[in-house]
Image (cartoon, rainbow, N blue to C red; front, top):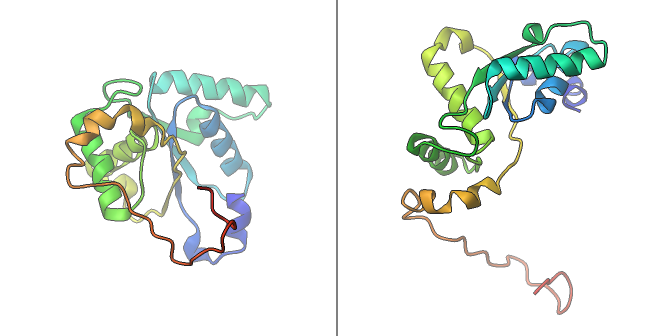
Length: 181
């Protein structure tokens, strides 16, 4: 789908890297082989939220071998550790990062998958700026927003000034049409 959209867009929308969270390895394997086989040729950078990079390289390799891809996982994806304290466990800095991204961009990251991947990416950019310099990056938000519920107590102190959104209807609806409650 991404390749198809890019074929119909200008070259300014083409990107060099795809960044994604890695929790099972399936998404990473699919993106990596698709990028290689398509005209996209973007480097896939995965930030694992559990286990370790070697585990995921082996897992992805098994999937690639299963489809006779004839390629090494280490040649088509870069996998880095971003699990922090462990799967579904967050440091105060990781939770603060999720909050700061939401405040600055309106994008809500979950603390289990995309939040850890984005945190890992920014950390790697700061530690290895030449690796990322001048590159166009597609960050794939894989969802997982339900992971925020598990962190509600930990996030409460960070969210002190936040409150639930009040949503008012901008267009009045006719009686019985489009109303759910």
